[in-house]
Length: 235
Image 1 (spheres, rainbow, N blue to C red):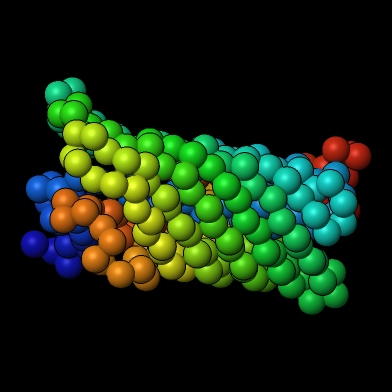
Image 2 (image 1 turned 90 degrees about the vertical axis):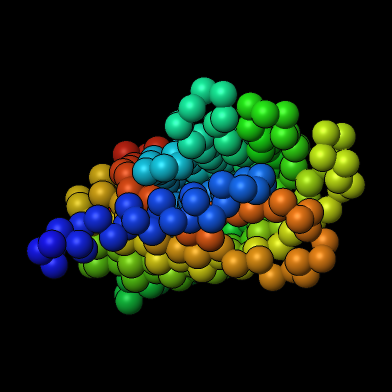
């Protein structure tokens, strides 16, 4: 097989391998995409939509020149069989602090959020959870806003409720989730690509034997920005 064809099918092979590894367990956690609003000034509105095998959407508003608030939704189903689908969904309220250095086009963002969600399948497994995260990150923006490079480091804690069907008591699992995000396009609409990892950092002894999670964060989509006062990105 030609080398270029092998490279094209490599991401699909990786995803297939992951799904095979977790097929004998319950899928408790699929890491949501990392939202990176990158506000520059008061009145900025940012929206992000991503997809692949998971999908998500978010929106946020810069209340001041340093504070923003927003929310996001993420969902996943395996889509293979109506009688055996795994699913995962969560909604989150978010907000944080940002600082934009207009001289060096450097952006600092520290955000956090709290949300709730549910994971399960059609065979009787179902669990409710709450989710808390904190996410520091930095970004470097092109002077004409056509390119954005983001590095983010999210720490997530997932608190699972009691499961009657699996006879599992409440437990918590913490994850470290670094990611890289690239955006390309115009100042107000960009193509968005994200790659990250989700690594549990709490003891495996607190998790059920059948606990499974997705270790990858992959997303492609669109990012849009505008300013409520009629200017885009401070211009």
